[in-house]
Image (cartoon, rainbow, N blue to C red; front, side, top):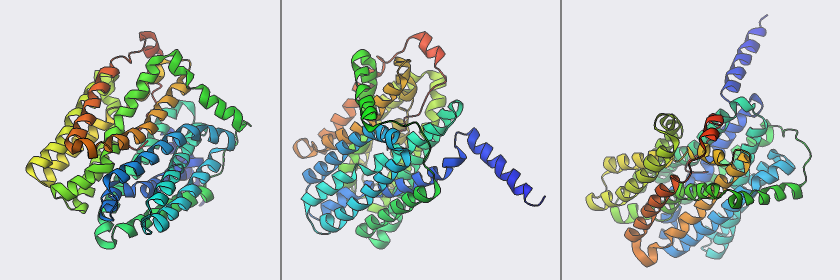
Length: 432
């Protein structure tokens, strides 16, 4: 009698989680994902200016992030195949191991040793780590969740992933850098990753799945590229997904340095601004879905996303440049920018409807676009040296006008929209 009450209470809680798309067997995985992504995202807001202080030029920093981005794109594309062949836990543990080993090499022999070649090699290979861990868990979520609550499950996945990668990591870095310094904060990132990885190792069991060879899995991933040839609109959706977050990944390379060194913010202030922007982006992941039901998915992506980012990208540069380091005005602009970035989330409902018989392949193109965005952003940031910051900002903003125009080409047949209106899967916003 005494022990039955906690059991019933625990059962109600498990049913509550299951109703929201969080299976009891992997519930701790969402916590582990958040902690891991905090560690992965800590460096985003200050690594570039820190390396600048240590004597590395802007071209080297841009190259570092570009190599990292292309590796992330490849890993995001392949992680699903590996998870299917080996089981998601093994893939997550492989990503965890790669991240830890090459982060240590990056810090000890690259940053502390002042060796750019080692930094480039170690940071690039480390780029394999977080997609294997994060996307490996995404596969796990899809394997372990009932179909009727799959949309909620994937939505919560992106919520926790972005919460850790952008929001909590930025606030943490802003709080501890003034106390312990940049290098020690980078070592703290390693501690978060270790905690997240060990939680998965000890608290989650690998799901049982049908036996699939690695060769078959990779063949399936490569084969999904052909959907772009058979349905070019899916490829257009992938291009819009690249445009979605390219400003974020470009800003990581140069905007922090500019705001601190030239505008006059101190690093802690900018970390708070950056973190609040990402908090707004997390909220936009949920808000954009309701807004899409009200005014239409295409309209949300095109107007609130494309035009919203065009305006706020320019404002985020010009307003602080003209008025100086005004914390609250810049914060307000950053919040609207974060909301605009999140308005691209309905792409995850639009693109699968373009290929209703091959939705998985269509979503894979979105994932590839998300990964390529991490490559394209730093590449565009590399234009700062030849064309200047102002010219680079205009190039970034203009690409959102391209995305605005392309979005109107993504209209699906009416019957497909009606039959599949409830199948939207959030792709996530910033930090996919």
